[in-house]
Length: 281
Image 1: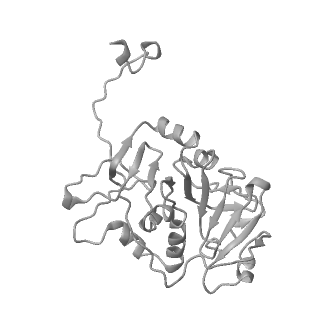
Image 2: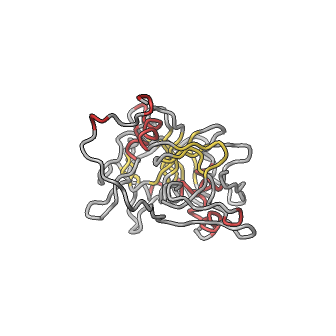
């Protein structure tokens, strides 16, 4: 029937039959009843500084949000969703409603199409939906994603973000980051170590690496503090929270640009706070 045609013939020159259609799973992740969940294990095996970032990032979740999470710390933050808060995770590959790793004890089978940003196998929660990658990016570009949390290599005082490549190093591609940070209405939060492995600052006057987006960052969460970026007024950072045991002078010594300091400067996470662990789904 004409209304069942998916692709009009005017676009078709050749038809090639597919004889081998197996889609390989890149990073198989599963869980079992009675075992510590794989996601919780990954959190338990990291240091206190990174755990502080994870817990602080989770405070960005508000009830009813549609959220896109990047690789690593952003994804791990979904283990600490605040009590009473329900969010839906969106993946660029076409899944809305990401859940935890497949539970083998419950006969949940890994699916190569159900993956998170780190290519790890996940499940779909009740009420989830699947769609094409083009529809997924329509959601992003159309301003339907409320919050994006992703990693960063460098952030400037004006909210410029560099996170997709280090020149000379091989990468698969830029992923969806450029679309995510440029999406209308979405809040963009960057999580990253405050300084690089060689001790050089990652929060700079200007980024030296190729940009993912210009003037796109709303908040920076590091192992040392939290900065807000006033991108609506041409940039400028304000220190709004600080890690336990650190001083404003410590932050200045590790930051390569000027910034303001909020009158009230609370701790980003109380070290006595255990947090409410909750795997999405």
